[in-house]
Image (cartoon, rainbow, N blue to C red; front, side):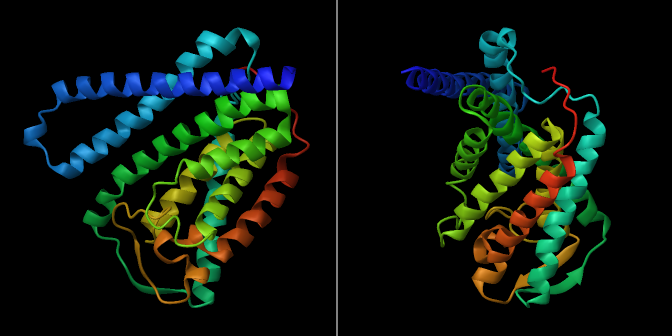
Length: 286
């Protein structure tokens, strides 16, 4: 009976979080519409501004519901680590290593063809928005899944349940992405990526390692290696690539995250990261 009650409370807070997000998003959109004259900017700018407003709305909604219901109950979000910048840097290095290993193996197996390199000023300048975008995305998604929801589930149902459930939710957050249903691998790998981020969250004792890992995974995949990020193509890249092999190897239209190579790399990095941080002494604040 208690288990059912706790699950109902978590579900209720999740529904309330969605409602709060919608209200915040509408209010910020109206405010942005008054500041920006829609007729004077192109559609691309409007899409970018909408995405930023959306991610900010999620972050604000999480912080508000946390302060209203859970701050006094000592729910740990994983935000206030003492060495957050060091952990963020380490997470960034893990992300670079993870996606570089995936890219290199696919290239060796001839699933990707490198056609050219571009270090032109226009290419580098175009990468500024994706850099900001992916940082927002990583903070947004990690604070939601490995932060608030992870903390709620872990408090009542334990670590394994929190990692598995938030990994399922993480994969479902991307259900509308292009080519995600081309075969079972995209959703499977998003679930495995959720496990990877969850392991990093649990072992390191906070959000900053998974945030850094998530950030550089996306940025290097899309804007350094020139491949689709969860089915989406955002901005120019330094390396120009073409998909030339089997979709099971290169991920097809979903990008390398839809490949069997990514599955193996994610599992290996999950084990390595767990071993790297498992004996760390944890310091909890917020």
